[in-house]
Length: 292
Image 1 (cartoon, rainbow, N blue to C red):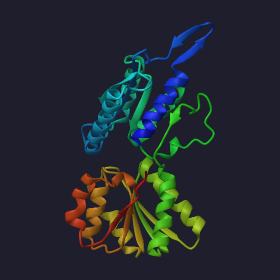
Image 2 (tube, one colour; image 1 turned 90 degrees about the vertical axis):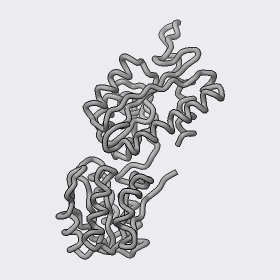
Image 3 (tube, rainbow, N blue to C red; image 1 turned 180 degrees about the vertical axis):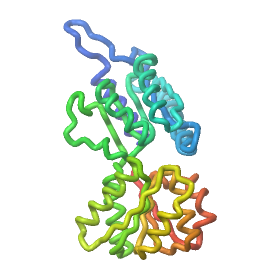
Image 4 (cartoon, helix red, strand yellow; image 1 turned 120 degrees about the horizontal axis):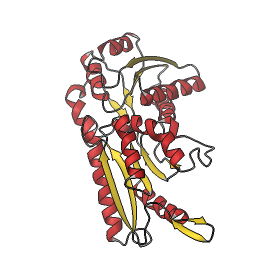
């Protein structure tokens, strides 16, 4: 992922550093003879800080390495960050500041499904390069992107609808599941995942999907878990990201679940493992997707 970011920045800098204006060449915003200014907002406080803090640190470490090696085509990367607390309204306001006050060349590492969802149309309209999104929201998939309609958007990681399809295929292929139970969050991430699961189940044929929704960040998920347990499913998908995943996993263990569970790659994280292992260990297995 990090190499892809650097390569994309290099390519974008070469192709967009100067915009023709008659006989006069006008430097692109955020690009000088010596620097390229990029920015983002990341949740470095609040419930998603365990993901946001190392995410930001990784970007800073990589940009430092690139700069120490001479930068991108001789230009050093200047990285500007603000904390949006995973709040879409704050993320939207910060994007405006980054573009109009900080004058960044590119948004790099746009973070979180709700923030991306609130700002994607703005990014398309503004038109500056937007490289890598820390979310799998399905709205990023745009096979026929055109100018003003997403040709400046460069997602990298898998989108949730496709991951949902993979989860369903995994449940059927690995666990011989003819009935899949899904506990999903009633937000963009959860809805996209369950949509993918239902699509693949229909494609495979002979697979029933039983789904129950919970509110994002809900502390009490017992009712949804009870319904899935009573449905006698063959495998369970936990289709919720970090703010809700631990509660669902713990409640499944509490209610005596023994069926295998699958969850999104977003939850394959040391913090999430530490949050649930004492409750889940020895009771049932949780499998997570991964991507490179």
